[in-house]
Image (cartoon, rainbow, N blue to C red; front, side):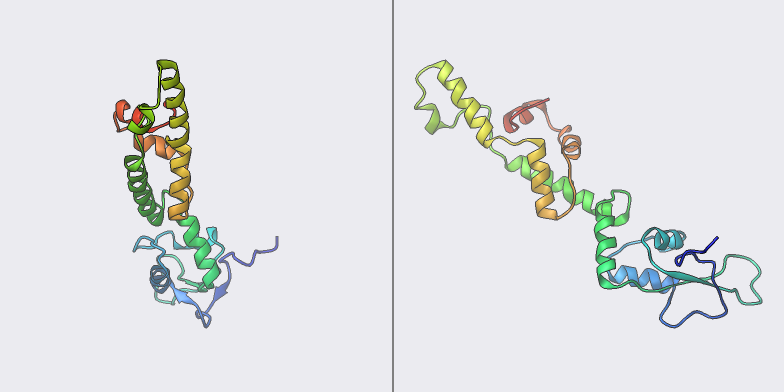
Length: 189
């Protein structure tokens, strides 16, 4: 079986030139806004999952316990941007958790700044002559100015540059009262 280029089964006596130790690699990622746990216990898995090359170096003769040290080749700038973008869209990573907090606050902000669409504004209400016309105008007004969960998700995606969906919007809005939701959204349910 042919070994892949990324597999860490190469045995080097010394670390190759241009590589970073585990601690240095974590610091390098931190300087590039990629946050990992300080222990870096899964740094090899992180590198393997993101296509970052690394090598395994033989332990010194006095060390009989533990794993062999790994040294990582620093990825280029475009690769770092790609990794950062992937982590921002993953709600489990540290970067993703921070982005999730920003998404939730922005969803609340957009929802709170939305127009009330449960009754006609004064300038339109004065022009209405009967109740059926009032209901028709209210439907048109609600359709034109009301928010939807999908619309809120699109606005969040555009402002933050990350993925957002209506299910996240729904989970954030479920803490709000049904009266407030009915006032702001086109459709409820």
